[in-house]
Length: 156
Ligand code: FES
Ligand code: FES
Image (cartoon, rainbow, N blue to C red; front, side, top):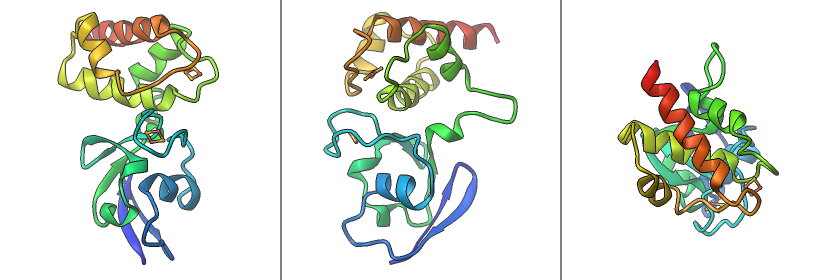
């Protein structure tokens, strides 16, 4: 099967996609975009979070064929020619990255939260990120990063 889609603003094509292949596999293994991580492949950890037509999804739970003629935005697509997205900068500044495996998914989930709710309370942050697991940080630095990103975006 051939899949034609838009990824991070570019037209992309993948050939020989097999019927059970996930969007995550297509992105990482066929299109050379390893930012979305593959940790559980069961929708449990959030490390593979991407936007599909602007909606946050776990790419491991989406069949590659479902992305036909649709738009995908990955963590690689958050940064621009001017540099990192404020959320990416905030994660670095807060030291919220240790092994980094959870980070792309958390960055995407935070980006999604802040576009819907620019000034989230701590309970709202915890609820929004509940589907994203981190084994390293204890989450406090991640909360700091989300608060920092919200503050930077409010000031800009
Ligand atoms: S790899 Fe997709 S949710 Fe864990
Ligand atoms: S930084 Fe290692 S899993 Fe979150």
